Amino acid sequence: MNDSHLSESIPPTDARILLRGEGLKKCYSIGKKKIDVLRGVDLEVAQGEFLSIIGASGSGKSTLLHILGGLDCSDGGKLLVGEEDLTRMGGLTLSRFRNRSIGFVFQAYHLFPELDALENVALPARIARKPAKEVESRARHWLEMVGLEHRMDHRPNEMSGGEQQRVAIARSLVNQPLLLLADEPTGNLDSETGMGIMQLLLKLKEECQLTMIMATHDRDMASSTDRRLQLVDGRVDGVNVA
Image (tube, rainbow, N blue to C red; front, top):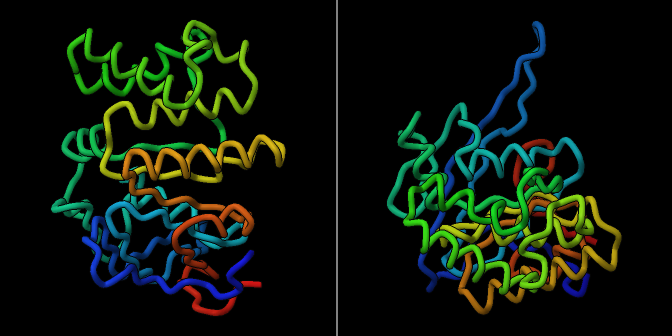
């Protein structure tokens, strides 16, 4: 990592804040035992920023990402994305907001094996009930943006891991979300392919002015992002990163 110091969890003061989390908590019960996964996390992310969340397995970074994207609910605290308070949302309202405003990229690609690349990418737009011609146009555009215009009619089992992840990235962007969340997006890939995915994310961030948060244990990948936040035992840790 070129910068040996961990960036603070506060974005530039002149930036518009897109996401703000205050005192986010999450606890799970296993039998009679309670496990505090998040113990009061505060963070702010500016519009157009690429933030990486670093942490070892079990530090709470995936749980935090799921809460930031409305896939899970916090047990305490407040979460604002744009003007919307996700901690006050639920049910269909939260599902609609998530579909239209949050893009997700996971370590496992979560593509439907029976659908080709174009159909996989189009799914979120179809769920959002966009017009059919617009859905296809958007899906084609984003597959071209990730360099897969020659793979549109290929199914997942006909593509490499890196290509499948590119399809997943295109799918995450088809509804032009406010925020893109990536959970260990290079975790299933070899180092060379993973670096290619990282370069793609950086390219898309610059060209499309995306706001992105990536959870990773790979500090080399994190070093390329605008800012880094480290989780240790469910809390933001401001110590130096080697």
